[in-house]
Structure formats: C-alpha cells, structure tokens
Image (cartoon, rainbow, N blue to C red; front, side, top):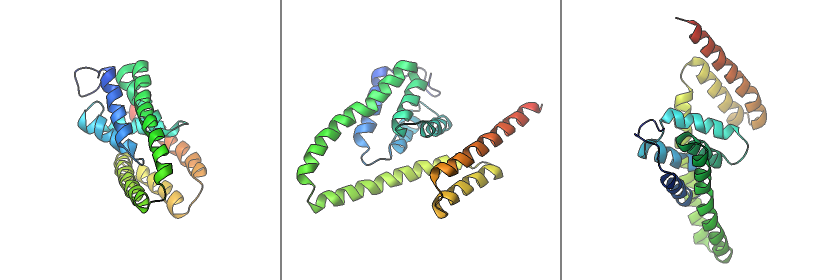
Length: 189
C-alpha cells in the first residue's frame, strides 16, 4: 500500500502513469520524470523510498528505467503491478519509437532534426542532474558517507578510472560501513 494515499493505485492507473512517462520523456531522464510523477505529483512513494528503489534498479542488470518501473509496480501492487508497470513503460514508447524511426530515416538530413535532438538531449541531462543531486543530498548524510560520495565522483569524473573498478571497490566499502553503522545503532539502548 502506498505511503501517502488511502489505497493502492488501480492497475489501469499504474499502466497509464508509466505509459505517460514513457511517451513524454524524450531523450532520457526518465528517473527524473518518475520522481516527479510518483513522489511529488501522485505521492505514491516517499522520496526516500524512490531513491532506495533507484539505487536497486541501477544495481541490477538490464535497463534502469524498466527495473525502476518493475520495482515501483511491485511496491504498489505486487507482481501484477510489476508486470503492468513494465508493460506501461515499454510498450507504448516502443510503438512510437518504431514510427519515429521510420520517419527519421526520411528526415535525418535536415539541420532542424539535429537542433531538435540537441535540445532534447540538454533537457534530459538536466533531468538526470536533478535526480542525481537529490540522490547525492540524501546519500551524503554524515562525514563518512560524504567522503565515499566524493571519492566515487572524483575517481570517475576527475581520474577517469573504470566504472566497474570504482563500483567494485566503493560498493562493498559502502555496504560494509552501512552494516557496521546499523549493527552498532541497533546495539545501543
């Protein structure tokens, strides 16, 4: 059951919400649209729940937004919700993408198409940045967490170390520190 509403959303509402996101989120940034839709607009999830789901979705193999849709659907309506959410985010957008790809092949030489795509890409980066900053704000609570966040960012952005190596190092460290903190907090009266 969602945290801010009296009852879980209907499957039809869940499908419609994900179809809307999939059809209106051109060029990426879907996690930003999901945050706005499910946390801020519909209040089906809290921001903390959303960011926890986002972290899990990014850790699993596959397409992050589909993983996120499955996670949100499951949180709100169980297995049926997961299926409906995944279909909602994929199927309508896939149908439109096939039509647009056919049109693009005939219009690709025009400069207006490239300008349009550059504008869409800029908007998508902005949405992704907004979601990343929210996640960073929630993750960087405390000195140790802030240091892990800063070290991870520096390793990838400044030192250009391979992402797999950075995540392979920082994730176990971060998980171990979180486990230690939870274990020690639980032992205190």
